[in-house]
Amino acid sequence: MKPECQSCGKGEGEGGLSQVFGKDFVEDLTYGMFNPEGLGNEENKSGMDIDEMVKQAAEQINSDSMDEFLQQLLSEAGDNWVYRDWIEEYAKREKAREQVWQSIMEKVKNGEIDPSQIPVKQMLRNFPKMIMQGLSEEGLLEFKMQKHRFHPEVHNGYAEMTIESERVIAKRVLEEAFINLEKFGFGLHEVKESGHGTYPSNILKEYDWFLHAYDLLDVQETMLSTALRDPSEMMLTEDDLKVRLPLHRARSSNIILVDISYSMYGNKFKGGVMAALALRQLLEEEFKEDVLHVVAYNHEATLVPKGEVLRLRPHGNTDIGRAIDVSRDILVKEEGNKNVFLITDSEPTASYNRNQSPEANAYRAAIQAGLENIRLNVIMLDPRPGLRVICERMARLNGNALVTYVDNPLNLKEFVIRTYVDMKTRGRRHS
Image 1 (tube, helix red, strand yellow):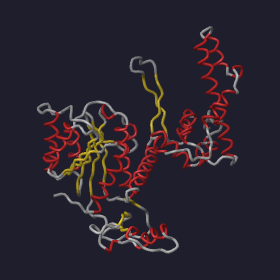
Image 2: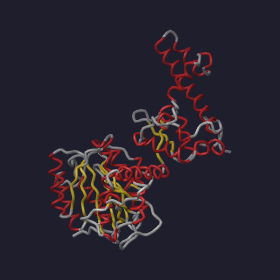
Image 3: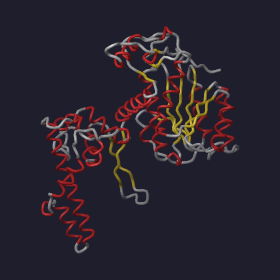
Image 4: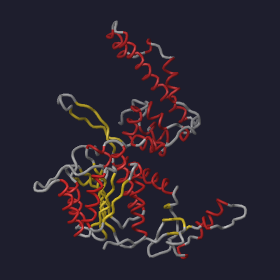
């Protein structure tokens, strides 16, 4: 029999997170653990303030209601009032969190609270233990034990994302990318019919006199745009025109190289991971004939399978030559157009080829990739002139490359998605 959840007092079948809050809310919690900034502004919620609820509950708890273990800690503190006060405050807040968590659970079950009105960020901030336990029961987190670095006899517990949580997060990251891109007139929408062109397309864009023929116009989407803008008169304007772009039939084999060296710590690392997840999800949803391999590189280069992308951590030096060589070894066995998206924030600092410097190793790899008709899309996350010189020279030596600087790493996913869709819709072929 499955043991009861310590957080909610019921087994998964009766009180699991999905059963109580619903699938959408659980996915919000999962995404929020990875990227809380992506949850947006919660000021428009129903006015529910969980921070204040916990604070008020803590103020109503007295020391006599503490459990036996915490009473013992208070006793051991003795006359150390600083430590004693801290222990007491911590204990009150933990007990308050348990009470508020139970209260929210019951009110959601009774229909008094709509989960869509609950501020997710505040839930994550106040109930990390309960949520992690619940996500673990849902198969979205996996708890593991690790030996202490300096004390092997000590084991520390930690949680990792699973292949299911990676699927949830990848889907949300791609949705977020297209929401941001649509603000600039670049969208991808699901439709029931096939579009114009040689291959069915779900890609909509604003009409451009210089780029699009009239036979690409999508009448339904154009009239919908007009109706939303001018529902009474339905006066069609040029701004209402929408086109459905044809896709290029040629199969494409791709690799996204995510820099995981030490210097990628923070938003640069998160941006690289999000770009890899978004591009993989895009191909699975819209370009099923294409292939994407995710390769993480520092002084080594490793093919990353599904379920492992969110487990990457930045460490090590940067061997761009090795990363390109590993990509070439993978792509020479593939068919169709071959592309590498190389993400980096620093000059190469390592070379697995002992006879070449890090820079020379990168140049050699770029040349050899070009000989195999592999296109390099080099994406810089740092504007340093030294890095730019190296990247531009790699591009020239490759013979079929593009170098771009992305100033905000969190916008990297939008850039990669837009580049890939443009490449497909314009039928760009390697020369």
